[in-house]
Image (cartoon, rainbow, N blue to C red; front, side, top):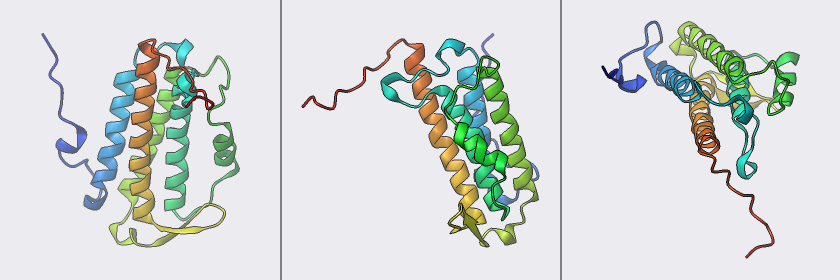
Amino acid sequence: MEKQQQPEVWLRGPVPAIPPLLQPVAHALLQAREEVQRHLARFPEHLLWERPANLASVGFHLQHLTGVLDRLFTYAQGEQLFPQALAYLKAEGVAPGPETTVQTLVVAFHRQVDQALEQLKATREQTLLETRGVGRAQIPSTVLGLLFHAAEHTQRHVGQLLVTARILEAGMGIPETNENQP
């Protein structure tokens, strides 16, 4: 018997304990987590760091998804990045070693989504328009701006990750373009 597919997360109703104004953020993060899980469940390990047409690798996207959620949610709390977060940022896209597998990167992303959801539950709606500084330059944003950007940035990278994975799995490595060609 064929398993019935659920509607997208945003069509399943409110996520329990998430403030109403932050439901779209939670929906986007949960949708991203489901898509990563579904599409990478059988992704070949040997393709994890491949870069067809010099695109970012699936491994980079998985690392970046985890890291960017941590960074943006840290800023949303009004905190600066810890040295570990800066080191993680610097290492994004670098194949750490054979112990780093598709599954370990997917699990790390899932954990980060879980942490983000817990932070959303603890976020009071009256704080959403409070100013927060981003980066060393303390570029002004708001709690809502950071949380929204985290959601849309996650969706963007999941889309790129899925396209790259599909190209690699199909064996359609796109040749690099020659800048000297007309």
